[in-house]
Amino acid sequence: RDFMRFSKASTARLIFGLNIDPRTASGNWDPAQARALMVYGRNHFGKDAFFGFELGNEQDRDYVPSQVATDFMILRDVIDEVWADVDPGRRPRLVGPDPHGFHSAPMDAKDVKKLRYLEGFAMAIWEKVPLFAFTHHEYVEVPAYDTHPPSAQVLDIVGGIAAQVNRTLRESLYVPATAMIFAGETGPHNGKNPGVMSDRSMRWANFADVFWYLNAMGSK
Image (tube, rainbow, N blue to C red; front, side, top):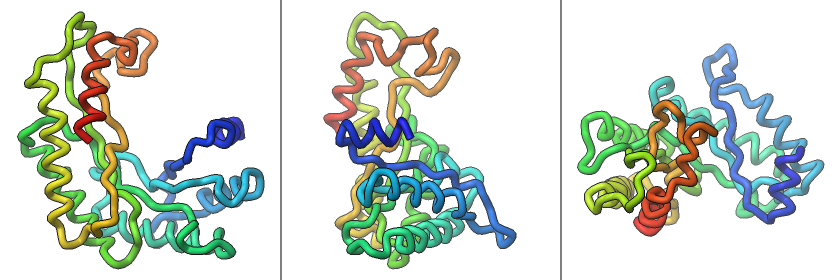
């Protein structure tokens, strides 16, 4: 409730991440918990409580694109049910599938596999669910506690990743021109110990990382 109050008070447009793991006996996503959340949000914070929903976080190693597309169809039906009295164009949007982060440019074999996952998801969901945005993660290692900005070669990695992801999806026959492309998570650190958000690290307050973030936002 406090989180919803904060979102409402700040006029932030809230995209809520939903747990993709609950499963029915059929193996498909179980929307019971998500439906309860939606109803609660609507009843307490209005029809516009949610700008959108994202289903799953870094689940590309656990669920194939076709299964995630099926789960998104279930989510779309639940949204249509809960917001049946709202014009379809004003109902919460859908974004996803948020696979694990890209790390290199040009991409190595692991990153190419994640890119193929995005393509497979786009093909599986084509003409079934109108996706507002395709999302992915992105982490590039920047040396910790530097007192000078990262090198141009490091900064160029971010632009290289963005260019390859955008080019691949924009050239796909299965990605509508109206769909956006989001870096759902991005940072100069890939969760090594101590983690990026650890109070032992303070990486988000590192002087050199400021330049990385400015460059990353500009490259998008």
